[in-house]
Image (cartoon, rainbow, N blue to C red; front, side, top):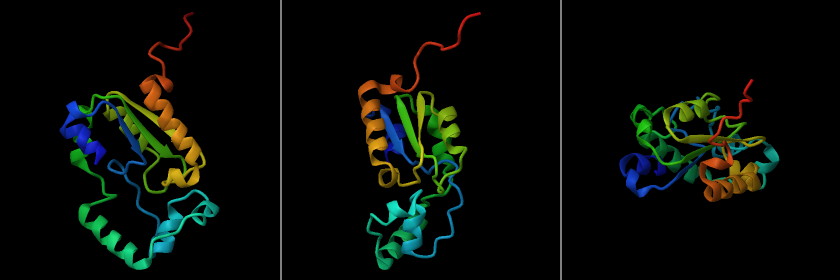
Length: 161
């Protein structure tokens, strides 16, 4: 939703933060056959999954059908083609252990969105808030306070010979 808002109404978006976005280069999902297996696949560590209550199987089935109809997790060529139109400061946050997007996805977002910074949260899966909540909150707060300068400076770090 936030990604499309930034594309369709850029004047309404001052900055954009994407958490575990899946529109570009989603990976083939792990073999998921139940609510329980879907729940486990979201996390880098089973003990983190065990701290959260999974969806019931009936709700999982309904959500799966809705996701299938909406094309969630399917590469969205229309979104990818319009990423160049996003000019607000953007931060895309990915869990390093995310099995729902390809390892190349962060690079694609960085290349296609002109003012995009990438944050990789180590030891986190797709559900970053479940694996590393403090790291996610700190990253978002730092970005909201500092915009893009909190990750990379505007000046070159290359030492002149």
